[in-house]
Image (cartoon, rainbow, N blue to C red; front, top):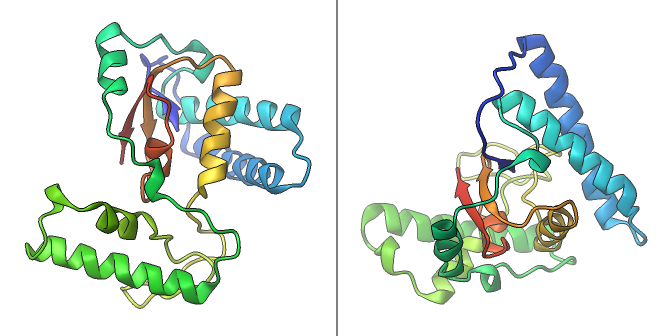
Length: 202
């Protein structure tokens, strides 16, 4: 996630971008590992999160989260009227690959129906939204609809981690604003966002 702001004008060379991307990936993996630990080190998580924010800002030409401007009043109202969707994202730490494969297949089948016009995507029922929310990608060597095997490093963020990151951002001083989720997957960060955050998801 990246807090959107005015560009700083900093230029980053392609080699520097590569180095920053690697450092960002490593830091993100460390944050995930800490959240999964029995006793997460919150100080380490805060430091890593600050660094991740700085890296993203450098790569995207923006400012780190601490420098973001507060959201305008009309944006607060827009966020407050958002339809809640967090309830669609069940988390089961014991979900096995076979269950993930079954749920992914159901989501892909529903998506095909939406794309063909058989199902109206604008008027999905709650159970259909939950089917789509259970899609978890092909990480862990699952085979996708395209027949390709997913990477061991690919994963969709579990709900407790997304909620934890929002909590951490609040502790770091984020009280609302525009947020970019450039790799939103099934939309977990938008679903768990506080009403003061306006999330643009890609």
